[in-house]
Structure formats: C-alpha cells, structure tokens
Figure 1 (cartoon, rainbow, N blue to C red):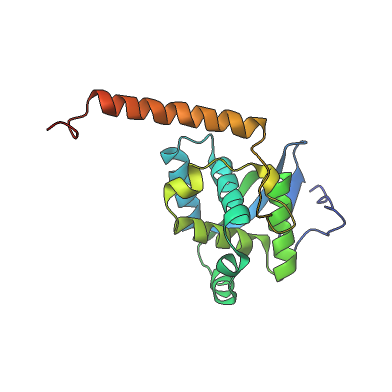
Figure 2 (cartoon, one colour):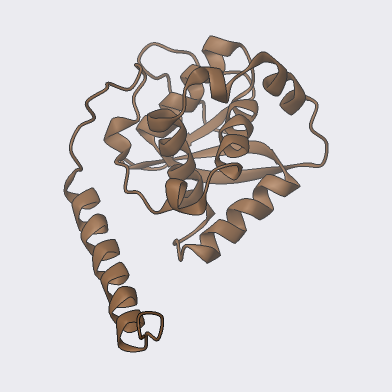
Length: 185
C-alpha cells in the first residue's frame, strides 16, 4: 500500500489510511457502524446526492462549521463510539480540507479517525435533514483552525449549487401554488 502523505507536518493518525487520489479528493478508509453506513446511503438517496462520499462530505462540513467540539467530542460519546460493534470498513472520497480536519481532530483527541467520523455522523443523525444537507457549505470553510465567526463567502461551485437548489425549490413552490387548495376559502 502507498504510504500516507504528511499534511502540514502532521503524521497520519493511527488507523487512518489515506490514499492521495488527485488534487481534489483523497480516499480514506474508515471503520463505521452498519447503522451509520445505512444512514449515509439513505441520505444519499433522499437528497439525490451523487454518492455516499458526498453525503459524508456534507456531514463533515456541517460538523466543522456548525457544531462545537464540546457537542461533537464529549468524552463519554467518544468512549461509547470506540466500543461500537458491527463495524464495516468503507472507503470514501473527501476533499483535502475535510480529510485534514478529521485527521487533526483524531490526533488532538488521540482517537482513531473512524471514531471522529462516527461522532460527526452521530451529531448529524440528530439534526434535521435540511440543516445538514440543504444548506450549501463550502469545503473552504472546513479548516484546521476553529471556524471564524464570519465565514468566507461561497466559492463559485457553492454559488452554482445554491442557485441550482434555489431553482429546484422555486419549482416545487410553483407546483404547489398551481395545485394548491390550502389557501382557498
């Protein structure tokens, strides 16, 4: 197997197997619960995402940009996640900023990257679908340092995704209005 690349002078975290795929995505192997894998598959279908990697990227962006470390990584929850049974090894493609974030949290908290990812998924499973998957969050705001109060504006890809989502939502509203009986007297 290829040796994992070193990120910003940080050695790869234990149990974190990373293969450099391209400039844009990095392949990571994680041990996740069957329940988490099933949830990612369901959310991929529900939200018409391209694959489970995209669903996981949405979750990592949500966690890195919206959730506090106290909520994500309380000692009890991380210990519970370490004891998970029925784990399956899965491979996902993450943006480098997302992969770096998971790896840094893993090193900082001295747990495997799989436990960090499970903590992220655990928090996302408790949120509404729309709060995790229907808000465009750029990977450029997923950084190794704490998220600034004033986030960067959406990148070009984020703006395009937001516009596409707005058109899709407008069409749904328009269809509803055309067939609506809820406002008739």
